[in-house]
Image (cartoon, rainbow, N blue to C red; front, side, top):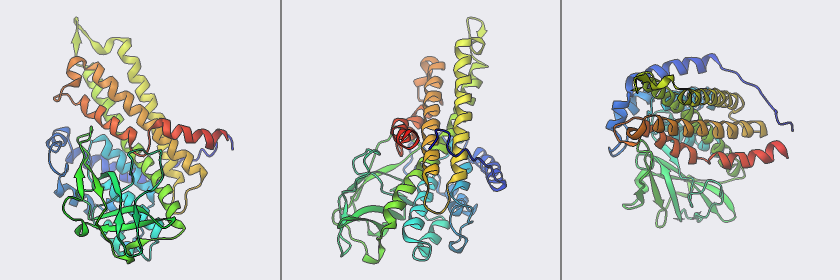
Length: 375
């Protein structure tokens, strides 16, 4: 395999339409003043806005039409997540979309049709990925027996507090399986909320001991392991798309401040020491968007090939790195006020810290890219 590999990149008419609609919707519905209102609220988002998103059909963009979806494929989610990242609009859409993809790939359309129909209609769902907090460790230690009794613990389950369905990767014997856990089956105390650096997010630890599921709600088979690996890559891509949107908004915030703040009688934006980092952010953002839409071109409903894996990993590494750099510069350029609660710069550096770790940081992905690209 060459270092260049597959360089296909397309931007479909459907993606362009979704990007335009999503940008307008998110800009109107989620100004930063509204984002701030939900930072310390319980769910962290507006339930009425979530219903509007479901009515727009965003929950079913990548799901088959027979399940109430649009059948546009997972690549069509990318512009929507990018627009949501730009507006810092947080809802359960990302975790719900990934849960739908995992269910579709692991259980198949026919078996999962009723579950997928609920997701497409706006029923929030999530996947309980982590056990030790390390995305570099794919081992599954939680278990389910033949009768459906679960044991173990999952950590940092995003949107677990509002999800009607939690997909729990477990081991059944020596094989990975997927337990479909309904919210009504959760006993009191099963969820312990986490305190996250990004206050626009919500997650919780899930304690599985003493919880049982119907054996009919356990997905088994050789396809489960591949579905888990592929959906993790899709998660990296969608987080990258959201991070790129946030990086763009962060750059706008920085540039606007540099155009208005004066020091020693001069606009601080006139100093090259501040201009050059802004150019670095812009160029890094252009690179990130190229990687992201390249990956969106390659991913599809079937198993992901090596080219798609490379593209998803490159997108995640680049997008989260540029957001981290943009957030850091935003805080520094705002001076002492950049660290304060009142300054919007701190929102972006917090988002950068969360996005960088979710589904693996740049070092995690570059380590795997070295094997894929350099053999």
